[in-house]
Figure 1: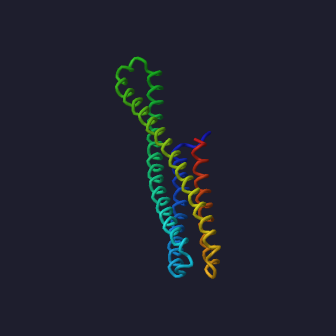
Figure 2: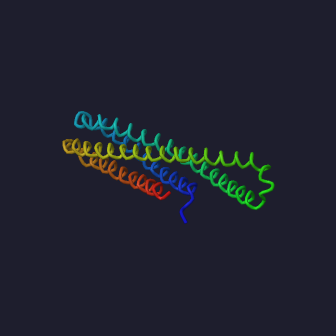
Figure 3: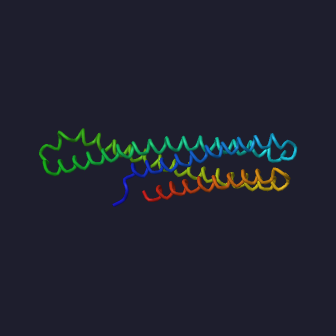
Length: 194
């Protein structure tokens, strides 16, 4: 038996919440990088420009995670409503088969129930496609984070006494990007199981 979609949507929301927490850590890394760049002055001019991109990336990931969480929560609610509508439609069909003489009195209610089920099913499918698109967008953010980390390492190599500290920041960006990628991969895996 497959996992109900409302459970899957809630699980995806949980993974994306964790990704958002990691992105908040990335925002802290950006603030540390900016403070270090100011302290180092002209020795880290190139790195100072990168700190803006780190901060912007963290903000984008946090904003997207909030949005995806909202989509996931809505999908979970719609999935529960679809499950209820499907159960009601199944009961109507059973009653109609058992009591054929009274079917005319059920027609309006059955029609409304079947229509609601179809609307919810369509809405759920659109929401799942939106979720897939947002997860792909998250992958783009991770690729950007890896490019920023690489640029940070290059800039760190010419920063003399600040090199070690800048390399730590670059490694934090890479580690955080990997953790976020893991959460996005889990979310995508959950989505593909539906």
